[in-house]
Image 1: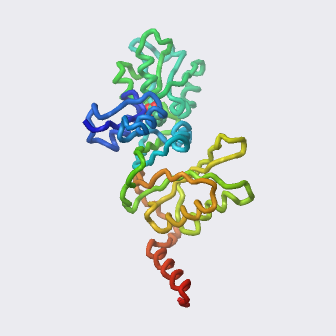
Image 2: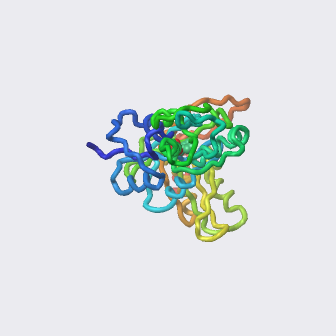
Image 3: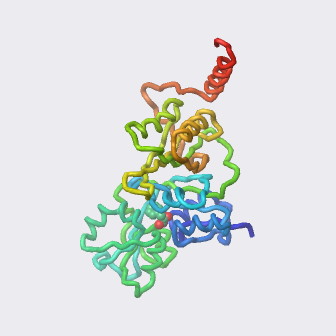
Length: 315
Ligand SMILES: O=C(O)C(=O)Cc1ccccc1
């Protein structure tokens, strides 16, 4: 059997669903459930798994800290794919438990954050405690002596661990979405598709007025659209940050390659995190004033022009 695909387990997590969407071809023997985001990275780094899937960010709570930390530290892995899923949460409990009995809820911190309003209104006296994943929470509740009355998880996790749904669709925002990424060991990049994303982490060389603006300018002057910007402490000392950036495009494209070169020249360090096909639905948002952006051909022409004038030509 070929090396399996690791995911944040156990079976029934949202990450399990994301892996299914990304790699529907895999059999259950080819799927390796890990008990934490760190364990997924470790499985791919050690070669125990060929690829891994982890949650990266969601539309309510923002970035998944453990994933960002692993992407920035330790042996580098590349993001080679992504998928964005609508997440819907249920409150699940053992047979015979009623909503009024629920005093202790267990779930993943991101699920708790996305159901905070519902929990406050419906179970104001209940205490919510963290688990490594929503399915791990359901598994804990399934054990009668666990001391937990209910879990917040995907409905499928409730079914998998023999629990009953006490409440459905309890997320505070119906349009909540989570983005998951596929991780691979360093190697060939996915081919450009024309609808790609590039991720990187930039560590500024020094702290001065406009340092972040200069970094962002490398993208804006080349008409590269950013889709995400997150600042993360480097861990060295208070006030030292690194910027995690997602940009539209693939590193083989001129504009993105040039932007990355510009950043590499001015930053203390840059970690390239991958160029990969975008997983979001490519819905065209109509704008009142559509603006033309430079094409890759424009970049090639400009480069040829530069070479001509460097060689003594005038145009
Ligand atoms: O715990 C899970 O099921 C995960 O896959 C992580 C997660 C938690 C909450 C929202 C989205 C993903």
